[in-house]
Length: 138
Image (cartoon, rainbow, N blue to C red):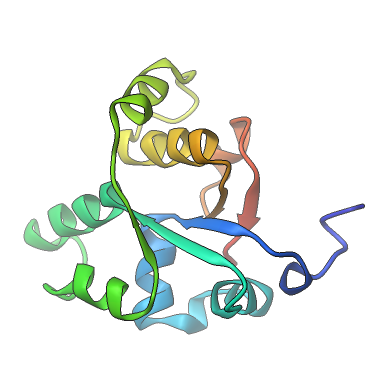
């Protein structure tokens, strides 16, 4: 099956949202492709948000680099997304990844996607260099 030509809404997935994708899914849905929104909204799909994403967005909010609600973690939970904690295994996998991407938060998301068998929803072209299934955000 050619996944590029298949409608994502027809495939049951377990997805992990990149930090900005999680933010867009909560407060700026117009940033996301129609197919991506359909996959995120499909009740048959499991949507994960990493603790690393909540951490990254909070750091950027506090430093003034990003507009993000203070209660973002609560909004993620209300949306029905599943919290994905960072485990020792995730940390070891992230540390062992090739240095295609230097952002430690993105490297953690790649490691979590690999460890948990998740498709990473992202707009970051560098992430596509890793051995991880990707769904384009935009």
